[in-house]
Length: 115
Length: 113
Image 1 (tube, each protein chain N blue to C red):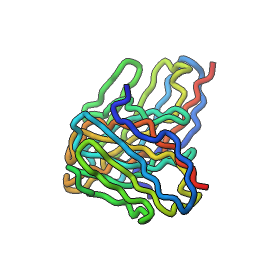
Image 2 (cartoon, rainbow over the protein chains, first blue to last red):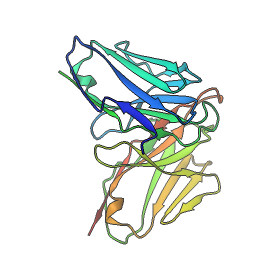
Image 3 (cartoon, rainbow over the protein chains, first blue to last red):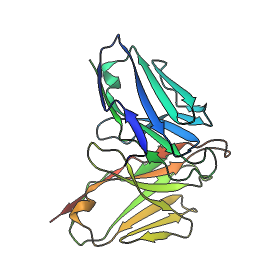
Image 4 (cartoon, rainbow over the protein chains, first blue to last red):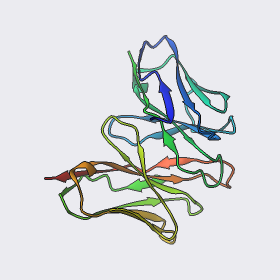
């Protein structure tokens, strides 16, 4: 069973659309992460939420807007994306928000195509 | 210099071979280290955490060298199913205030029959 659930698995959107990616975990983890992964590249950190507050933004363009409505949910709102934003978006969570994070667990990812 | 670096490979090895990967990191204060494997078009999956004294899990052994700021992964008796990309992950968070988990560049392993 996947302990971090991401929806949708696949998303195709136009450059003028607004869409959202969702991530959910019920392990009581206090840190949640968004990563972006392009083909043949490692995942790149985008955002980190610690105790439901944004703690790291890796200079991500404002067309990506994260949101953490509660301790189990993490959203990534998408607006006015570019074709080069097409990638696999991975959500992860870890038990602790600082110090020793525990083992990060990844969701299966959302494949995004911007047309 | 990238924060976390690996030899990208590919490493092409025959079944049964022993193969070793290294990963260097830039933050000497990092405390947490992990090895993940990622299959094509799948999410990264945890292989093992890396502890200060080194640790072993079956055919896999992980080592940490703080002085030289690198971690290693040794795979013994390689199987075809070990073919994947191996990624190290280092917590680059500063001051313990938050976690900043950064992936290495990844090393591709291809085990040949």
